[in-house]
Length: 262
Image (cartoon, rainbow, N blue to C red):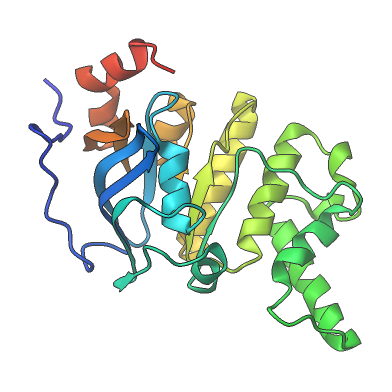
């Protein structure tokens, strides 16, 4: 018998603004007659690496978009650091220390790696002083070194291997100096060794830089080996949560994946 926790009868836990670094309460997003996220609630503790999983079409990316301000929820509340941020714009969320990566990342192909990262370091008002430009390049170099791109500063994005492009997307997010990072499908298309290397990097971000992380990925083996806790959704609804071991053995979670909905 699995110990993974779930709600019966559609009841949501009583989450409040101080129940986590990030709190999602009763989040709903409809597109016309389609409900992509259905009264979803969960909380993320500071310093946690949380896995956020579900089959294709479960509403994971839509949830990320609602949290970060790319989409406006139909209803529900998002709290970050105790503040109601439900309808803030993406740049306002970045200013508060919350950043994300994207599955469909398209770097600027006419600029090398370091220039792509520098763009994320540019403040609201463009700076033209040479000294500040030099500081920006130094900071961009440090971020590239952090994610393992130290030898690719002048490499063009289309010359990077797939794993390098994923590292570049992560570097662009880290260049905003986040305290909280949402990572969308970081292991897609990676070999096992590359998954292990990227997982080690994510752990270092949490352990050495204090970054709280939420990860979406379909590589269950890689994900469950990395995260502290897992929240599972299906058709936009919360169906289970628990430790990686509890989720791995949970029959409802197995059915959600083996059911084949897409």
